[in-house]
Image 1: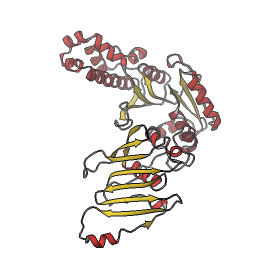
Image 2: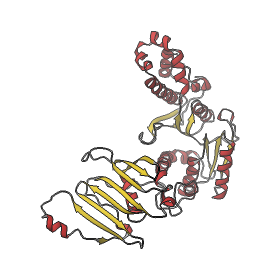
Image 3: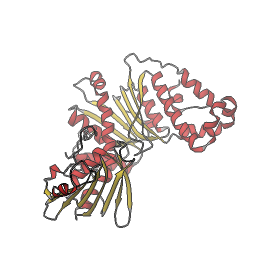
Image 4: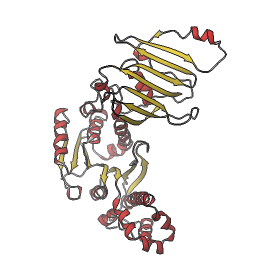
Length: 412
């Protein structure tokens, strides 16, 4: 298991490859040695700034394989048994030195004789682990090393297919979302005729990383025609996304300026997605999906302010009618988190009442973003119309005096 790694002596193309003029990088295990952790804290230093990220073991190994002895001419890695130094020179020659840190019955002098310089090709630079240490590279849907046009254009990959280190969180986030798309593809394929495009609406698309990713996945990997609309309030963002789509030739992908609450389109979407649509914007997106009988929904909520404000207003009432909730409302941070959890639990309940099979899942590791909850809903074939009431949800809202936006919109 890798315990730490340090990189120094950057080449001139470091900024181009990694996005900033780093002069050194220090990476260390996030837990004590021997715990079997695969999480690492990385410190990225320029001459004037320091940046901090979290890496997983597969990412660290990939970074070592890509940049040790090349982007950085000096790399020192420590495992539980070895110190490994990877050196490069300006002519592209790479050497490797190994120093044993723990005795295994081999005399020190004999081991020292074996630690001479060994020339390695770049493909051989990955640190090899012993069996049983979970040394497996993450099999991403969008594989690192293979250039993906939209990732290159949006500054996540280099033209050679290397993921820029400072954008690795976004790369992982995109792949994670595509895994959830892949999981529901059987349902979408079964319900959408093969001779018509899959229709997708991305509400609150922002810079549209996911919109482009879904288009690429459906058209290039699943080999399905797709009609995708990205909707956002900001005209400059929509203009930018439209320009990118035209430049990389995304047929069937378009963007429009508009409010989710008032959006209408002649063709109902088969899939509605939202990523961090703020506060009640998520509710309007879910309402749109339900009323248009959308087959599947993937929603990552954000900034659940509405119920938090209602809990503030109802504090005295709640303390009297539901004393069990008083400790949850006493401390601001806990109240805020409770409001967020209650918001999404109620959303899930209302979707179930509207005829969806619902799962609440971890979107991405909480170490990268606290907004890591994803609601995945697939409409049941026997979905009721009109929609049913939700007794459990009603019991909670009644006890706390809450009026969730989605309940109002769905008239449940």
